[in-house]
Image (cartoon, rainbow, N blue to C red; front, top):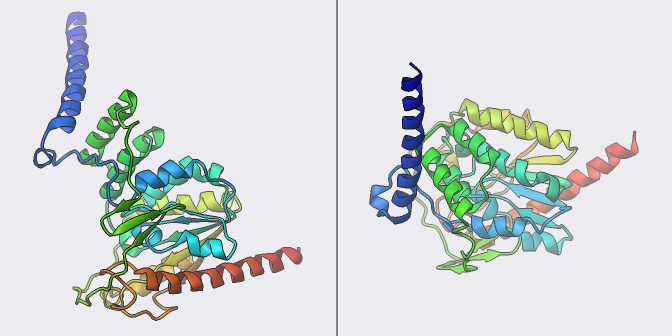
Length: 317
């Protein structure tokens, strides 16, 4: 019996060792076609590597932006700077609450923002979070929070990519990586914003769809809100503007609004400002620079009003 147990332990040990070595070689040298269950792309779309390389030099912010690509392509840190706000944009592609929680756990204390503007796009609550998890694993450090994220997502692609990411970190194989500021028609702006070369969208119809929130995403979102409130940070939830035809394709926007209003101060910009689907967007999701400027101007008005209310409340205590 003892020999059997020793043989079993030895088998498991060498099996795990073989898996790790094989996974590393496979991830490092195999063609992407053969890596359907491993996707490690450092410096991928969205400039997350540059953003997270810069975040450690930021602290004591006026405003921290969180959310999906609607955040890092929608909140232009230069515009807020003109109005005297020290800001940083911690958005990432397809960021779901599960990934937002990871980023807050790592960086909130150091950033120490007075206010957090959290872009809450409905689709971020309806997906599994695999895509965004891969982005963060490849472009940020990996730690206990990475493992916690992988366990919550529970997907083989995330597990494999995380193991590969741990090996890459351990061997220091990304130390010489450099991400250029300019890629094709996009430019990374210090502070986390990504500016797209001015372009105009072509209106298109969308199939009707319903917002169906995943319970694990809502749970992570609830935990995020609780953390922010525990730190006495003002929280503003924002549904960033999307093309009217895209917005109209959701047949239960009111349902989503009602949920967000329960958590904090919430603003659905699709009901606040009127933008043109062609003139103010460059694709079916994202604002062009003309739209960004209009959106940010209105967001600054809300920040000013929120600060004014906070001062008034404080003066009555």
